[in-house]
Image (tube, rainbow, N blue to C red):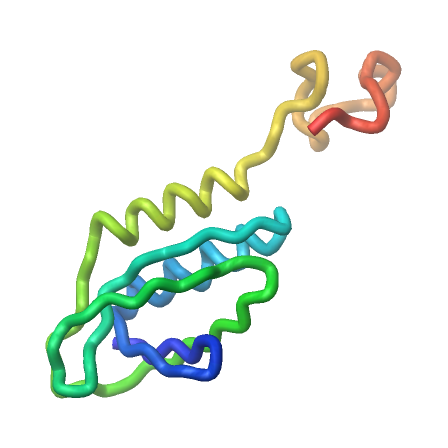
Amino acid sequence: MQRIHYAGGVLLTGSDIADAIVDYAAALATGHNAASVDIPVRTADGGVGRAHLLVGPASQLVTEPVESEFEELVDEALVERLRSATTGLSSTRPLVGGAAPYEEIDDADTDDLEWPPIR
């Protein structure tokens, strides 16, 4: 389990969920984007509740592993959606004209590229 410190509060959720949220927030921040995420959390009495988070460039998330008497919260579908969204935000975009990725361009190839690149 992990404790997420968020907006002056604390949430207890599964480790994979917390890790996926932090990675997603970092990917959103690089693009100056934000998104809302609904996650399962442990309530004070050990039950399962939901928390709705707004994550993005201004998010200040801190997670820490914690020992808990309660069963680990698992939501594989949520983690997969977050990982997929993170990958989508992190994917490279092709250069104009279908040129090779930056690492493969030699000086002769740069004459046909438009500058600045179109995003």
